[in-house]
Every structure is written in C-alpha cells, then in structure tokens.
Image (cartoon, rainbow, N blue to C red):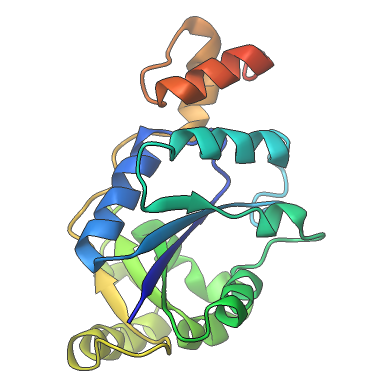
Length: 211
C-alpha cells in the first residue's frame, strides 16, 4: 500500500531542521512521498505577520529540491480563510482514497491537539507521526489523548496496512533545535547557516527578513 506523509507548517522560512525531520519521517515510515504544505492563513498564529504565502511556497520548493521523495502542495495557500488541518487532510483523502496518509507533528503540537478544529475527526481520518520537540513528555498529554494514544500505537503494530486513520507512531528522529523565529531575527546580522543555500539566496534576492 502506498504511504504518503503530510508536513504542514508556516515555513517562514523553511530550514535545515524541517528537512532533517522530514527525512526521518520518510525513512522511519518508509513513505513513498512527503508533501510539504505551507499554510495560507494559520489561524493559530493570528498576531504573527507572515511572509506572503507565495514567497514561502517558493522557498519550500527550493529547500526540498535535493530529495526526490519530497514535493510541495499549494492547496492551503490557494484556499481562502483559515487553514484547518482537518480540511487539508479531507482534501488529500479525496485525492488519495486508497493511500495511507500520515501527518507529521511535534510533541508540542500533540499536547495542543484538543484545541484544534474538529480534532477528534482528525484523529480518525489520518495517522499521526509524533516527533519529540523540547521537553514535553507523554505524561503531559491531556486525558483524552492519554486514552487515545495506546490504542493508536497498538493499531499501527497490529493493523499496519489500510487507508483508514487512527494510527500513531513515535518517531526516533528528533526535531533539531532550529527556529524560524530566530532565523528571521538574526538574518540581517548574517546568521544564514540554518537554511539550505538555495533558500538563503532567495531570501537575499527578495530582501526578506531585513528589518
């Protein structure tokens, strides 16, 4: 059965940490493809001014060009209104009905999952790959997820195939301590090492992160 990983994010800018975790995601789950999905209007960051979506999309295209397993989708960039993960997953479910879909997220995001739009429907419609990020632990999970997670981990072991959702896996690959926020803040002082060279060239050409 074909397996596709979905990796959503603001990607402002995409950096080496994103590439590192996506490669671990693909390797550990033996994914055929990892699709990067830059957010259009990230509803959970209403006070943050993002770089225009088309420029973030262009940076992702450059960042992923060295790995043939990677591609990028503009579905959230083109969609009007807030970007909800459940809507994005539903779209990919329609396009790939016979494919096992996995959504990549960090432990910090998993802790906040009960606050996501229609999160219970999301847990049934997609499989979750969780990567450690920061100092969060499974014991910090809300009660509803502490009840869900053991069954989801077990389903991945006992029913590894199938195009349905409801599975979970804890990745061995860790998020690198690289922050898009720090990159933006330090860019004008010459701190460019945490992004692929092609992304750095684009940022400088477009005059991004100069303030």
